[in-house]
Image (cartoon, rainbow, N blue to C red; front, side, top):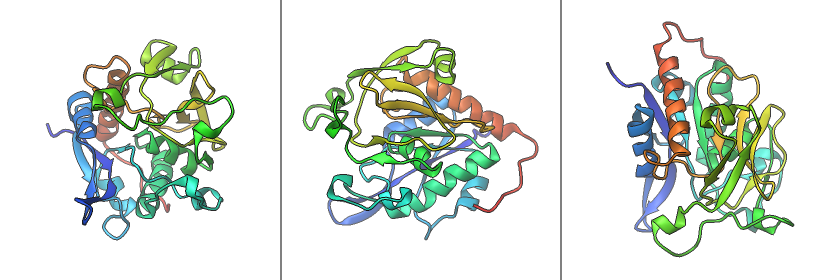
Length: 258
């Protein structure tokens, strides 16, 4: 039997500082293939090449990956500043309406880091441009130097709501995670449930209230060492189960306007 397809939302980069590419980290594909048990398919996230309607038909679920570019603040009604960093408006144009369409259809997605922020913005929320500048917050950014192992080292705890969705998926209410992000949730969207926080109060785990499908998103990077990490594995396993459930349905809902 063919594996269900997970579209991996890619980013635009310059290879060797001159050759434009659409790319997704290998660890994302590894997590989808090896832990979720699905077929990873990297999406060129640009409305010139793909449409949300096409993606919904081709893919069974979506992984909204991390990436250096940030969601443009115009998407949540604010002006861009130097603190907001780099942007990828083409990805914004695909990922944000894709989230809303998946929520409407009950189609599963899993948001990671920037993907976590995309879910909040797509559902009407806002972002802080730089978490570490807020009083009482730690520096959540990736260490600038060191090996990959050192950059993805587990650096802080996340506490989930007792009896909440993440608690049920994880089987525990407190876990230790890596942290490699600069931005974070300022105001959650009206349907966004913040189900986990770092000790400094930073939102780290969310889902969409009342959504029929899998809408979990985390601010850390569970794709790192996903097959062997006790925190990452249950997330990608639950996501894979949700994608298979969607794929196995005999009839899918008709597309609605995004």
